[in-house]
Each structure stands twice: as structure tokens, then as C-alpha cells.
Image (cartoon, rainbow, N blue to C red; front, side, top):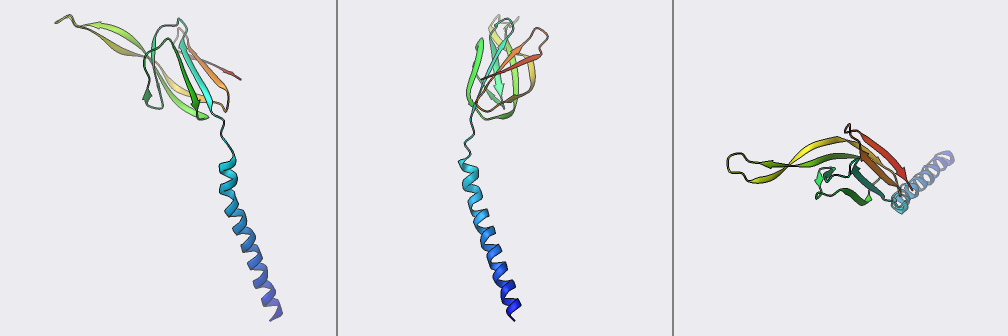
Length: 128
């Protein structure tokens, strides 16, 4: 009988310790602050580009900068604007021509700088 009580008490202690550990884990995880990164992107010739990051498209600019980016892989699409003249009514519009599509890794609290070269390849530099 004494041995049975000891086993039950031991199990209760183990369960109590596990409960404390599992209860404190979310607090520890949320206290770990993610340091956000920065993403810069431009063309080798500084021409105007339209950039899409993770499906969100941004306005045309010659040097794209995005602050407070979560660390990790991000889907990047880069387009150049091309002037199009309708041969029928001679109206001028702009069309997006794809230049680059791929993944870029953004590091914690660092600036990831991308330059799309003349071969439409991404050259990445990570700076502090």
C-alpha cells in the first residue's frame, strides 16, 4: 500500500512539473522578439521597376526598399514597365514585362540588397 501511494505521489509531481513547463513555454516563445529585416531591390541600370513581394505589388520606382520584413524566404517578382501604343486608336498605356521571379531570404535585423543584372539574375548582398 505504501509503494502505491509513493507511485501516485511521484506521478503527481511529474505531472505538476510538466504542467509548469508546458504553461511557461508560450511565454518564453513570445518573449523572443523577432528582429525584422530590410529588403532593397534595383536593376543594374537603375531603370524603373515594379516589385511584387509575396503577392503584394508595389508602385514603380528605380530603387525599391521595404522595411520591417519578417525573416525567411520571400517570393519576389520584378517587372519593367514598357510603353505600348495601340495601333488602332493610338492610345498609350504601360505593360508589365517580367524580368525576374524567384525566392529571396531575408535575415533578422539585416539589410538584404538585391540587384537584378543584365542577364535577369539576382545578385544578393546581405549587410548589417
